[in-house]
Image (cartoon, rainbow, N blue to C red; front, side):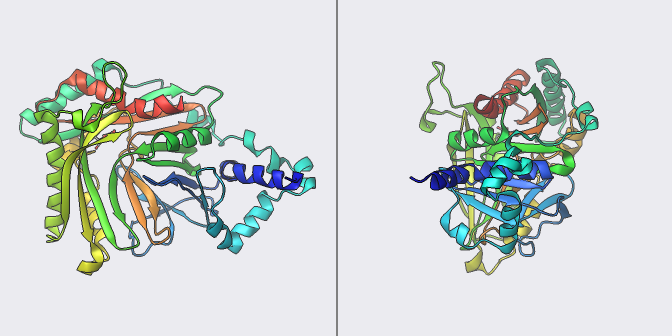
Length: 416
Ligand SMILES: C=C(O[C@@H]1C=C(C(=O)O)C=C[C@H]1O)C(=O)O
């Protein structure tokens, strides 16, 4: 191999990392993701320098990435630059061929590897050491930790009383866990580790310069997807158990037994999805499940729903269902308004983007939106993990605390 081609290959390997570091240092919004069961990583950079606030209309939006909070306006990252990388982090050939002029100009400005650049340009070569800019005022907002087992158990007890009083049937309460990251922590490495560890999850990294934050996650839950063939999918996911046995062994899904509480909790979510179909008088959906599925260190109960939008001549189904479904009772509760009220009165933190939804929209004619679970917000060396649990009349407050601990461990086990 000639020295030039060796250099070229090593630059290829680092391209994903370099592009990310450029976005972080220049303040360009960025989304990097791996779809479930895919070995490709996809990357979008919005060159405008800020995200757009928008209503999510899947039929209208250009190619980009949606980041939506639990409550409030959705953000849209425009796909000005779009890259695809294979398992070895090499750029995918057909994506290179279809490169836009904008991408070529960008690469010439930031990634041109002439000999002179290698020696002289600080922007182009020392970029790896640059971090996301974070202001003092953002750091001041960081709290040392709002929750402990007793506080959270009391919140759950309060929710159980509300359920017993007939105010609601189910509510999902969540908490945060704050961790100071070690100096050795590298966010792109953490993303890569999550991709390897969780091939069945939607693994994502989203940089939002206006929030001076990076959100990293590995969620098991599809909210709405519409593929290039017009197949719409959603799911009801709930009920949680450890996937790891008493002796540290990985359990198999068929060995898992579910209690009445968990079966009921998941059935609430399925009923909610079916109610949404009923509202638009759609009967032509296929339903399969519930079945036990593994999500990293956890097992859940899942029912899948599928609709052929082409056969029904209903191309807007994705947009209509998104509006009806979010927030589902997997992250909020039943009935929705009573649950929202209790969440607002009880939780000590703002959920921000946790339990909202995120994913690529109209990228290669497909849209995949996921519920933002198993997620962490990173600001400087501060990490806030978010996790929640579904509470019904049969909940045990201490068990629910452990469930949120296990859910935080899905990320912590891999990235720290
Ligand atoms: C709320 C979360 O997860 C949701 C709640 C579940 C439950 O209550 O058992 C299971 C899966 C998700 O639908 C979370 O991960 O934070």
